Every structure is written in C-alpha cells, then in structure tokens.
Length: 172
Image (cartoon, rainbow, N blue to C red; front, top):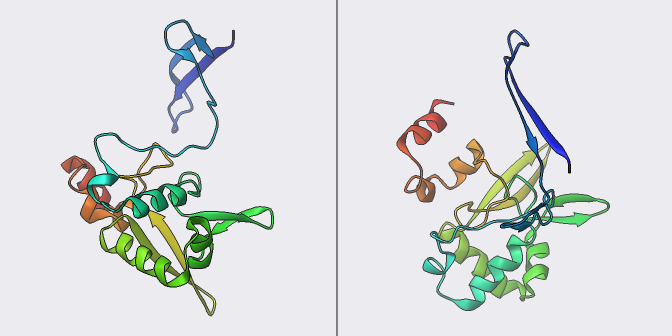
C-alpha cells in the first residue's frame, strides 16, 4: 500500500513548517475503490439545480452534452483537433448537440441570457475569436473558482459566495 507524504514549507525561508504522512488507500473497506482518481472530471452540485434555470428538457440535455467538452480547470467549451484542445466554435458546439444552425443560435442565446453560458471575445493580432464558458454553478472542472470565471458569472455566483470571497475577488 502506498504512503502519501506532504510538507508545508515556508516559501521565504524554505523551512519545513509541518509534515504529514499516511497510507494512501486505493481501496477502503467502507468507502470502496478510489475510482479514476487522476481523471479529468466535470462535477455538478445537487443543491444548485440546472433544471431550476432551464425548464426545456432539450436545452437541459444539450447543456449536458456541452459539459462533456469542458477543458480541464477552465470551464471553457473545447474540442480536440490536430492533437490539441482548442476553444469550440459555434459550429463545433452545433455539431456536439446535433442541431441546425438557426435552432442552435436560438439555444445559445437562451443559455447566455439566463447566465448558464458566457461568450468572451478574444482579440489577437487582427483576429477576433469567441470562447464560450459554462457557469461553474452548474458544471465545474476545478476545485477552485478563478477570478476570470467569477467575473464572467458574478451576477449568479454572488448569491452563493461568502462576502469575504467576493471582497477578495474585487481586491485584484
């Protein structure tokens, strides 16, 4: 059975402040098997229901399809192309959900209007590129909420965050 060892080190002095070690169990008699521990994941929170925001079952299903394409730790909708992940275009997302162009644009507009998806325009050189992000209240790919995701979905997130966290995000 592997042993996990962690240290808390003062970054200024390099001194070890605390040390902790213990058995790393991949199988626990009561909890079971630690399944796909290092795999990419998307999580959602049972107390914050997407179905409270989206009543249409088709839209709900389409959001789940798009959530399967979130890039790790960013909540950006991405596709794997030419051996790398790239931001998904509207066409890519349309293909993921299997809709015609007009219906997809209507769906995307609805999701943006209710705060489930945010569109960000990136300017590089002389090119404008759109990136799409899913609100971490409904699907999340990280343990942490980044400042940029907070700013994209601030209106919806403020209701769920403690005041001190909101103040911290506004200090930057």
